[in-house]
Length: 274
Image (cartoon, rainbow, N blue to C red; front, side, top):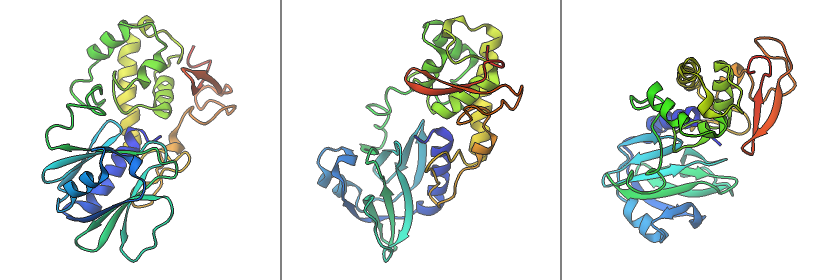
């Protein structure tokens, strides 16, 4: 599933492609993707004639700012957007097509059909699910060492499980939790409330630094991720532990291990993360 760096990269490329374009028609080939409103015809009627003024991001969600509405889109596992000419063939995995007045088409493809779209009146998008329950952005002023400390001190859940909880903070998924924990020298199974003040400061720093570096590299292409212009991310070349099971640690040379933590595949170095 795309995490914060990948979604942020998609957001930036989408702005270049669709900002200022006006929607002339919408074709929905897989209605289950539209979660709000429940009637797809209402969704179509609402967005037709609307201009895309900006594209934002909240955690792993994209936000399309229209004249009167905000379209909240989650890519899930395989979702992707692309801008096409109206003459380009539509493949079988294209489920939503936004036809623009200039003849181009913003197409949403999703092999697994797990993606979602919610339409809200502008200003109401944060008042209900899927955005209302989300924690702070890791790059925001609200994500402080003090905030992280208070959240972790309240629970004895394993630190990896807590960092994956989008109610605690948004944007982190399996890749970047593993990477941040390695950089901070913290074992993924450590009870959250046992971290020292020094470890909390280090973890807070490494979460922000890891995500920042990943955004600069365009995210990580592990399986199928590409940005809206079809370009892969390059941060996978910088990964210390994720996806490197049985390979030597880049720091100490010890063989990296993969275990399950909270039902998620977890990569770590038993020497660097005691």
